Image (cartoon, rainbow, N blue to C red):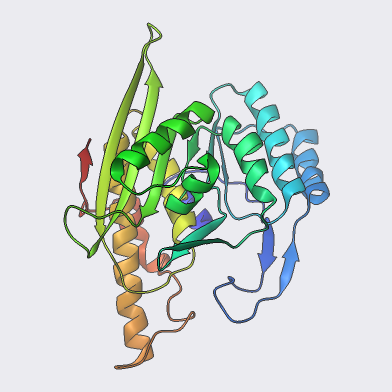
Length: 289
C-alpha cells in the first residue's frame, strides 16, 4: 500500500515481493515471485550507494521461506545502523471463512514467522487466525485474545493489533472487533500496557488489500501518535471505513441493481479516498480496556 504511506508524507522505497498482473482475488493472474537472491541483490545495490538508511520497514504478503529469512537478515542489519528503526510486520498467512481457518500460503512459512520474523518485529498486525497460528492458542473470548496478545508481546513486538476477529461485538452482530495492545517500558524499567477494542461496521463484500492498507496506515498513525495506540487505531480504522464504504457504493453502482459486484468492481477506491487517508474524520471510536 505504497500510495497511502506516500500520501501521509513518507518517502518510500518499494520492493515488490510479487509482480503480478492483478491481485489474486481474480480468477486468473500472471507474473513473477521475487526470490531471496533477487531481494539480496536489490538490497546490495542500495547498500553500495549508501542509501540504505531507513526509519521503518513494512512487510506483507510473501510466499517463500528463504525470502522471509532474507527479510529478517536485512531488518537486523538495518537495526544495527539505526537502533530506532521500527519494523512493522503483517504476518499474512490465512484467514477464517464461516468460522473455519485455512492458510493461503505454504505451511512452512509459519515456523519462520513465529521463530524468526516476529521476534525482530516492533509492530505486528495479524488477524485472529494468524494470531492463533503464531501462539498455538485458540481465541474464543476477549480474555483469550488479550492473553494471546500478551504471548505475542513476549515473543518480541511492543505493539500487537489483531485486525479482525469473529468475537461477539458489544455493539451487535453487524460489527467487527479489532483489538490492540501496546506495551512500553518506562524510564524506571517498569512496563505499562495499553489495551483497546475497536468495533467497526461490517461491510458485506470480500475485498482484497485491506490488510495491506491497514498495516500501512497503522505505521503512519503510530509514527504520528507513538504513545497513543487508541488514537492511531481510531484514525486507521476510520480511514478504512471511509475507503470501504466508498468502494462498496461504487461497486454496487457499477454492477447494476440486483447484480453481485465482481473483483474488478471491488478494487479499493484509494485515489478517490485521498482526503480520507490524509485526514480521516473519526467515525469509529476505540474503547480502552
